[in-house]
Length: 127
Image (cartoon, rainbow, N blue to C red; front, side, top):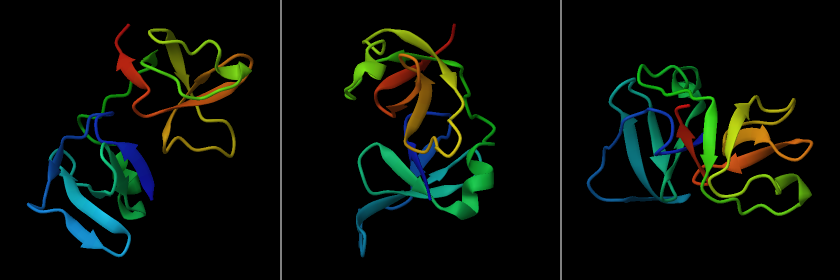
């Protein structure tokens, strides 16, 4: 399962159901990208879970925006390695460290080590 933010990237998500569905895992809405056709379920406001069968298409949407810089909105993490992640600071996106994933956010360089900013804590920028 791939966990993504509905607002980041470039997928054009369209809600498929009129009424929220109740299931074993809780209430959810079904979304489909009108650009590439992948589907996912939103159990929490602002996020979507994409099944593994769409993993190969999730990062190849024709409208997918891949940017290399972000502007921090807020950083709720604590610790010395997060001291440089202040509101409005700009950082380069880096690859996830070995053994880590980027399903809940993106990786940037903190103080002396890579750290993850969660979706909703940053905006991609053109620079």
